[in-house]
Structures are given as C-alpha cells and as structure tokens.
Image 1 (cartoon, rainbow, N blue to C red):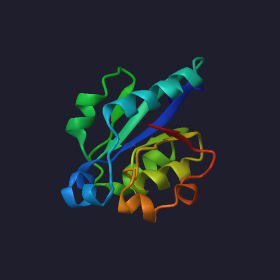
Image 2 (cartoon, rainbow, N blue to C red):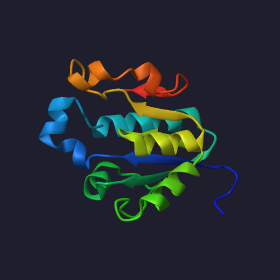
Image 3 (cartoon, rainbow, N blue to C red):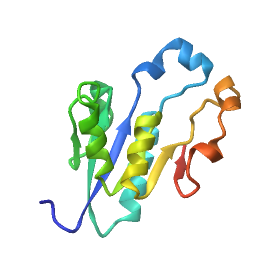
Image 4 (cartoon, rainbow, N blue to C red):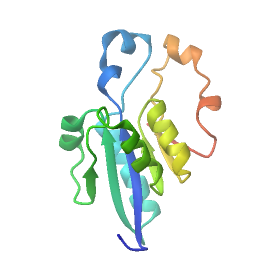
Length: 146
C-alpha cells in the first residue's frame, strides 16, 4: 500500500518500430527526452501537495532508463513479453503520460485520469498527418505537449 497521498502516473513510451525509416518517412514520430521531462513536470506542478510515483512501461528500456533519472520512477518489465500486464498496470494508474501508439492511448483511456500526450505525432506535413484527424483521435480534455 503506497498511501493516500501517492498518485500513480502511468508513463507509456513507444519507440521501437516507430524508428523504422519507412514509418518515419510516412509520418510517424517519437517523443524525445524533452517531452518526457515536460510531461513529468506538468504533473509535478499540478499536484504539488501529493507524492508522485511514475510507472514506466516501454518497448525501449535502455533509452528510457538513460532518459528518466528520478528517484520516484519504477520501470515495468519489457511489455513486448507481457503486454497484458503492462496494460493492466497503466490502466490502474491515476493519470497518464503517453507518447505514440494505440497501446498508450487505450491505457490512458482506461485509466480515465488526466492524460498528457505527445503533440508531435504525426509529423507535420506528412502523409500520416494528412490522414489523421487529431480532433477525432485525441479526446478534447487530454492535454497536448510538444
């Protein structure tokens, strides 16, 4: 039991297949370290009176562990081995930080808290941007961050 003053923030970081040249050429993009820091600071500033625990589920543990340096962060196992477990973990969090992809989207939807998402997807002026209606894809109450 973590206590009533601890908020669990689920962080889903997808990189893997979005780094493939064909996907990037089409318009996929990945969130960088700046976005992760801004998103974490958003919750830190919004919930100053609470203790925050960031729970990271990712397909790129090496990058995530090199990027996120904070004592109040824990990393789940590699979700490519146990995606159902990571989905359950993320969906049970109080709030969400998501990068790209439907896995993070659904985990945030199920968590039903405040959600921050990476606004740099899809890449501007790409075919994917042309084919994507962000107003339909992202709920209006979710918060875009660059």
